[in-house]
Amino acid sequence: VNKGNIFVTLKSPRQRPVVAPGKHPLSQAELMVLFRKELNKIPHVKAFIQDLSLSGFSAKRGFPIEMSIQGPDWDRLWQHAEEIKERMAQSGLMVDVDTDYLAGASEIRVIPDRAKAAGHGVSIEAINTTVNTLIGGNRVAQYTHNGKRYDVRMRLISQQRAAANDITQLWVWNNRGELVQLKDVVTIEEKLAVVNITRRNRERAITLFANVAPGKSQATAVAEAQKIAKAVLPEGYTAVFTGSSKTSQESGGGLAFVFIMGIVVAYMVLASQFNSYVHPLSVLMALPFSISGALIALWMGGQSLNLYSLIGLILLMGIVKKNSILLVDFTNQMREKGLQVREALLEACPVRLRPILMTSAATIAAAIPPALAIGPGVEVRIPMAVAVIGGVVVSTFFTLFVVPCVYSLLAGLERHA
Image 1 (cartoon, rainbow, N blue to C red):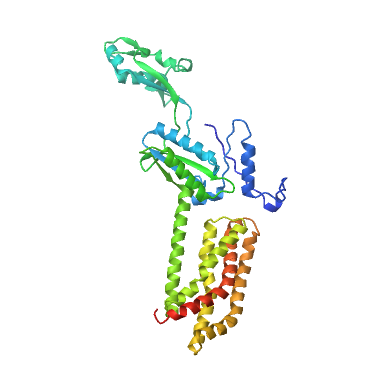
Image 2 (tube, rainbow, N blue to C red):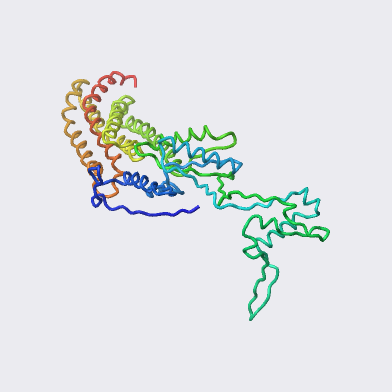
């Protein structure tokens, strides 16, 4: 298999020319699509484009989709891997689909016919020694000259070992001291040989890898690859996600756990702070609006729900609660002075309006530079910044209306809580 790697370092986006029909310099993702299309037009060339920045999430190649096919029989394994590879490429969710299976060059296999060999009195060891010595070469002696020791090797000349049929023309001694031609006791097979055989968990394995198609999500592509593997693989063969795919699944599960634990811990801290089981619910009412605001902002900005936007959602948990805390805490102070719930809310809301708007405006202003992607390499921070801006805007607006209403409704439960 002939292959080569080309490493390309892109110029700054401002230094790239505008390619028609586009109206702006192409991004890295757009250039990958263009390079893939143009390079694969070259005859007998199969081009795969890889984003090297993704290699930090994987110990292997760093492709977004990596799946290891494992099983006992190597020949059936690569056949199943090829079928899965074709289906993944036809799904429209993945591009640059390939495997680490390398067929390499052909090999000649000399298979003794034990019945015929026994009839001619030829041992398997004699066949092995003859072929190994005359075709592969074997050291039979050494000699010394001018203080140096040289090996003496026996081997046929290159013209006598160029073809597979040359092996069958060899002669071997039998146990009666007679010469027997190899074609009478062996058969010759010629087939493709693999360059290497990989294993995972003590099973033979072939790894498939691919890029996510433009406009598609990694989670959708991983789910489709898993569905294809289940449909193709028979009993005894398994598909295990590795590399970036495994890291992404683990990160998603870890972030979901952190999100849930953050809500639980926040409720416990707020309950101890307010000495109430009810008031923390009023504070946490801002969270649903922040999540919906973040999702709307990501949709409007053309961003996906990825690792960075999930980090932005977790960041929102700590940001948006401060508006509710300011409002609920000051309302409690007014009630401690003897005001009823309605009067306390009417007193607290106008007073806390300015600090709520000031802190929200400061948060949004801090998130605007990364959202605008000013500077090289900051595109990865856009989803996080967009999620923060959308969540803060929506939660701030609804906090001013929803939290006082929820507080007044739950105030009657304080004696029971």
